[in-house]
Structures are given as structure tokens and as C-alpha cells.
Length: 311
Image (cartoon, rainbow, N blue to C red; front, side, top):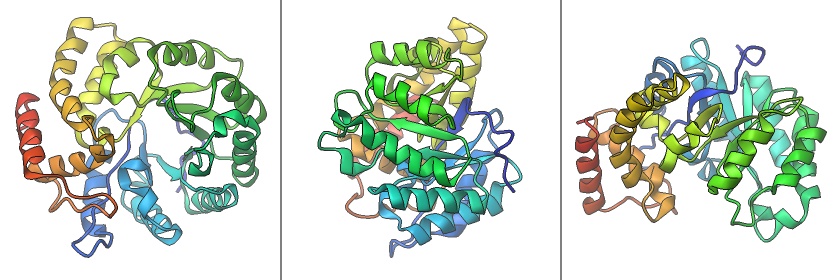
């Protein structure tokens, strides 16, 4: 069942985690339980699967298809599902996009191909070709994942405007520009185009500031752990209730500091450990090259949970 005709790419959109067993195989039962818990959070607009947070880089095509299918089976009638399109090649990305639509996804989150990481930002035609090939095989709404402006995987401002013009099915960006000034420019410009493109922030390490700038929503792996906090913060900012927003932000702060400390690549690793600490997941297994975090770090997460009032 597809919700694509009524999906709104705004508000709070958690990106879920994926459970593995000790042999690094997908633990479907535990993953379904986690996805269901996230989907039942009051106030979220959609759920993202096959993203960074579910270690999409370490899952092959068949596994990604399986994850989409069991997620739809578990929550497809509760909430729309956004499926990640993560591939180094545009032909493979189009294959994933086509499969996603055929199986019932409501929208697609399109990652920049890692093959562009050595200067793709200097060749805007690469981004255009990538998105055109995806849009040629699906009419689902697309979310363009925009990487930090300091890196080679970013789409510069002018490239984004060109992308939106040539591929009108891009309805939102997942903005990780990591540059507050540019982020605000994105919000003010893209959301006011004649064919508006919503800015979904993924600046979860400074979420309140980002939302106050006027982002239409957020799409974040932290939503797999603290979706209720994110909903409360988003609502307080919509109501312009600064006092309430600051109060919720104070609860989010210890966890955000713990999740997004160096090395940044361990953020979802840490989120899994928090699910274990709160009794929502049996064990925190990650696929290599990711490695389990130290006992010292797990203790830091325990402290953060306590400070946030979650445990």
C-alpha cells in the first residue's frame, strides 16, 4: 500500500535503525519491533528506512528490498515509508528507485554517490544526470540529501536550484550543509520557490537553532531514539513558544552531545546502544567496518540518558 499521493515531506521524520544478530544477519523480529515503536510515536509524519542509520552502506540490494518489504508489512498501513536510494552508480540507484516504487514506498531519500567524493561538486552535470536517471523510472517524490558544504560530496547552491528546475519531483532536501548561514539561505530560498522545496534539517547536533530558522521539518537518525522529544520541540517552535522549546532542548542536549561526539561515524552505533540501555533492543550489533563502542562510551550514554530524564 503506497501513501505517495498523500505524503507530506514536513514535520518530524525519524530514520530507523536496523538490528543484527551475532552473525551479522538481519534480526527481522527485533527490527520490526523497533520500526513499529517509532511508527507509533504520536506526531511523526513518515518514517525513513534504508538510510545511514540502518547501515544501508553495508546492506546489499536484496537485503534493502527485504527491509522495505517487512517494514511495509509491519507499518505500511500506519504511516508512509520513505526508502533510501544509496548507490555509487546512477544505474544502480535507478534500479533501487524502481524497486522502491513497485514495492510500495511513498517517497525516496536520494544519497549523493560516493563516486562523486573527489570533486563532484565541480561537475554539476553529474548530480543532474544522477537525479534524472532516478526520476526517469519513478514518479515518487524525491528528497535530495545535501552533504556538508565543506566537503566534495556537496551540491552547491546553484547546482541545487538547477536540480529543482530540471527534476520537479524533488520536493524536499535533507539539509546537512553544516553551515548555519547557508542553511538559512536554503530555507529562505527553496521553501519560497514557485515549486517549493521543503528543507528537512538533519542538523540534529544543533536542532533547535535550525528549526527556529524556519525549516519545514527534520529527518534524523536520532528520531529512532528520541522522536517524542523531536515532536515536542517541533510543535513548540511552530507555536513560537520559546520557553517550552528551550525546556525540551535542554532534555535533548546531553544526548545530542553524546551521539554526535567524535568520531561522528559512531552516531548510529551509539543510538543502538541507547536502545539496548532502554530495553528496546536485545543487543547492539553493527556490521564491519563499524565496530562496537567501548564500555567507557556506553557509560557516557548511560549518564546522558539520565540527564535527559529518559532513564
